[in-house]
Length: 252
Image (cartoon, rainbow, N blue to C red):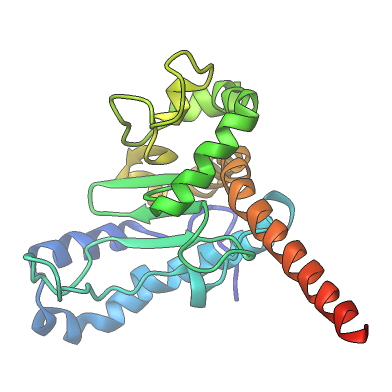
């Protein structure tokens, strides 16, 4: 597949935003279906190009994350079964890049979206399940200087200022009020994100900005995933030892 030309570092064009704005005004299947070829040309195909380009760059930047059109791109159709908003279509295009070694949807990853009014680029863990949150807090408790260093790094603060996400008003039960990592233990979500003008999508700066933002996030993503992958590795090691012990016992 052809790469974006040197004169325009992004496969998106002004037609991308124009289509998304029109879709937002006409969020109906009967409007969308006759124009699906325009969606494919101006929205989906450029998204595929970006994801495929990231797949190449992730070999050096984030080899542990999956970047493929099949696994990364979100469908345009909304799941309205449990929503009071019955609009059938998403009015933005988005992609997510999850860890290879954890089952979906576990773990921290990267994400970007193109919307009629903005470009948003970020990553981390949006809403970990309670068991994940327990492991994350235990990991922070044991290795807190690392997350402090990551979130105070110049590259991180220049793009996100600080760690983002919902927080508790008090520390979780079991942690002393004077814990040196108190500010991090209160988090329920762990991410960094940056919003840009929508016009960035079709500027020459889009892809360099996307990649640089992802690079700044990867230390946080790796720190968060370590809490889950280390526990998974320990489970596998214990399971293997148990199997070996049962094997030896059977020989006796």
